[in-house]
Image (cartoon, rainbow over all chains, first blue to last red; front, side, top):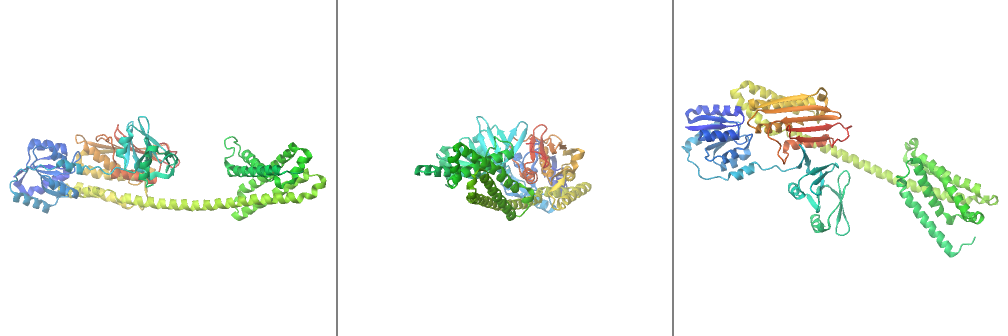
Length: 251
Length: 386
């Protein structure tokens, strides 16, 4: 007999699970349900279930994050529509990993497994949850820069940004269309958010290498860049950046 | 009149300098006096006068008549005579040729015919003008010497004419090549855009279908009616996305139909957690927007709205016609946008569709209060407001 908590954001999924567990009667004593991560943590701490059917994708956090916030972790059976987390899930305390939509035969296997294992002992090995969570929340490759002006956020796509110019305290971001946006961030903090093809040609200029139309040798170790924007903007590199530029462009 | 070696040298150099200045002015013909003289005809005539002056003066060594005139009347009068000749050439030759070059009727002729007419006009007017001037100014007894005047002006006019024909030919060829290139480019761009759009639309988030089917499987056990409703909504949704017959645009009305199908499906999935309302003005329905523009925004709104687990997720679509376009706002009551917004697939696809179908004619705003994504699209006529 397991005290069971069901965690899933879709009510129908919880009802189905209930229904699928019903035939095993006394083995599962369902003591509660939760529809999101926060609720799950609360109920686990209050009701001390022994077994939790846990959806990996919850609206407010991932199932892994739920585990991370628990002092005492019950046995976990993950349920998810996504195959790609199976291996990660088994690296945690998981007893089983069920793919949604749930199937009767698969539940039967789970039950068999539970019975074979008998009374599960407490696992003491603390898995590296943080690494899992990081992998789960891995940021998608950014394709644009967000610039906040007042209460609106502008998404400036990297392939639309011709160059950035550092002013006294601000940075101007120029687009191919000729528009410009003001950012309160510093140029060096923006460098970190931009992909590698944004290249510094001067202390206060960062240009998009993919939007250079022409590049000319200028005097005094400087270079003249004509950008591929509507204004055909011309920019000059700084003398001290000569070496980097030569290396970057294979000159 | 005897000309010494040094005088000869000076005259030759002066002639070369004048010829070079003439060429320089000719090369920059269109730029001359652009700022100072507004009237186009006046500007062209003054420029032409200067150029003709340079060339005619450069021809001095060939022109015995001027030296005779200097001997006869003095330098001032001789130069005045030249100025009159230049003026005559400008008024008669330049304007006749200009008229022939620019007249729309002649422009419709074939290139060869048009250029031949220009050449003939140039030669006839130039020769007759010089002859007229010569007859008017020469001494009676010298009048039989007209042949050299005719010959000089004939050569001069022919030379200038051929240069004109040549440069017209070169620029015609270049224009042709550029037209071909830009045509090719626009064809390529169109093909690329079409391919990109097809790829974008094919990807109407497979996870959504998967989740919906999963939900139907769950509902079929416990709530047959809802399962049926969801299946029907899903069928309509897919009919919409399969039957668009390659039209990249959809009317706002069609997009709203799709939106309510989508939202209805999510509403069934999350039961009492989701509500939505749509506000639109009467004219907005017919406006054409990129197909599948709204759905990714709604998908995000649902996802963000559900993040706030303590309250009912409420989504509001607001569509208003602008003077020269339309504004579509999707509002949700989820947690505020993060400081650093990283667009995932859905939002990126919205940007991509707008880039392809409303290039430089759209804005996307992320408002904090109320939390909303606003897309403004402008008709081609509209100037860029951004």
